[in-house]
Amino acid sequence: MIGPTATEIEGESSAQGRGARRRSALSLGEIFALERQHLRDRGRSDSELRRRDREIGRALSRIGGEGSGNRRVLYRGWLRSLGGEAARDAARMEKAVAAAAMGLVLAGAISGGGTALGLLRYDGSTPINLLHFVGVFVVLQVLLLVAWIVALAAWRGGWRAPGAVTTVVGGTVHWVLRRGFEGERRDALRADLEWLRSVGGWYSAVERWSVARLGQIFGVSFNVGALAVAALLMATSDLAFAWRSTIDWRPEQIHGLLAAISVPWGSALPAAVPSLELVEASRHFRGTGAPALSPELMARWWSFLILALLCYGLVPRALTWWFSELGLRRALRWIDLDRGDFADLHDRLTLPLVETPGTDPNGDPSGREGLATDRKPIDEGRAWAIVWRDAPIDEARVEAIAGERLRWGIEKVLAAGGGTDANVDGEALGALDSIPKTMSLLLLAESFDPPTKELHKFLCDAAERLGPSRDLVVCLVELRDDGAWSPAEDSQIAIWRRALATLRLPRLRVVTRLDGKR
Image 1: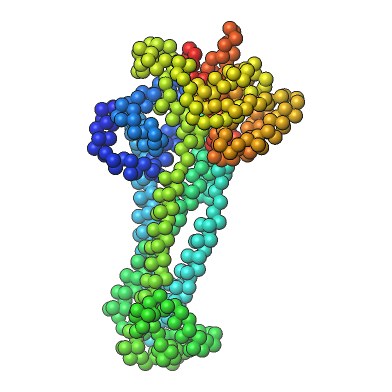
Image 2: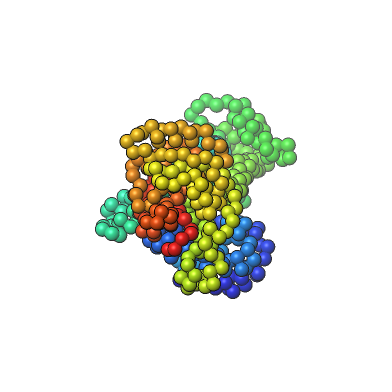
């Protein structure tokens, strides 16, 4: 059931105006909703999806055609048109992210404040060891920040493998499935999980920056809590600070360390830099009582400690949080929306709904969209083609199908799937080593012959040669009794898609011809 009508969508679009273009990057919630909708659509027939999405595509194009040149706007409009579960998925994901951020804010503030409260605990007998404060809020924070930078730089989430978080969450869910569910429900959940895991690597950059952002939210709130508690205690209590250590540090060494820490504010606030006199006077040995320091000297300690917490805790964490926000926005903005299932969706929204006149009750009853062969092909890309298992189809027909279905021009046609002759596949794969970087790959196969292990291996080897940025399209055709080629049946398309989904090749998709009677 389609959600808002075209009139409602048009009203929303007019109200938003140019703002929709400014926020063309999809949000985390919208990405989640897209993936969940792909899961729900797996059980529907290809013809049903084409009718539903072509109707939405027509409605969106009547609004003004803005989405035709911007896939993000087009997919956002598609989600809004579906409404129902799709809208709830997006809202649920956004709420979950917001709840996680709020939980980290509270946890960070409580832990930061509690840490400061523990380090600044003073009962009047033994002065506070300022080296503990410096060690936790300066040295440890710097080390953790360096570790964060190294981990972020070393994060390697490839397109063939899910990122760290996806792997951990996926393993946990698998464990729960094995113990908490049985029968068809367990199998369905496992299938959904495998689908999501198969595209997990596609969002590795989003995952990377999302985790980084959440970590820095915790870091900022930790330092805000610590700073608030430290400032409150120093303003309302007569705290006594000193330094002591089992190691025989000389005052000159401690002074050098504290002077180096004070570099960020030393020239602007020299009074907040501990002097050698202050360091010498603040040395403490257990059992000797608190050092006798004047209020003026004590003021240098609290100002030094507050500024150290500010400069080495709050400010760096705020900067890294801001940097993570920019990284996440950039990752969302640069998500590749040409992946196989997204490309299928784009086709369903934009390509004509090809059926005989009168068979589409929600479409164009006059048949104005007509057959794909009635349209002059538009060359939107170049590709090589592979004819699988000696399908009786000549180069001219390969070029015609590629132009009609994908708007691709064919540069070269190869043969593969030689059965017992392994040299045929090897020669085809060897030729792919020289395929130009701008070329995609089209494999044409007869739909009646289900995909075999031989084809699985060939597609995996071909994908390795093409890399993650180029399309690998399997086009299914069916040879009729009269010798003409027709589109594959929905049941055959479903078999091929289920079988090839196990390869976890996000750029791989299965299509069929558009022309002919369904």
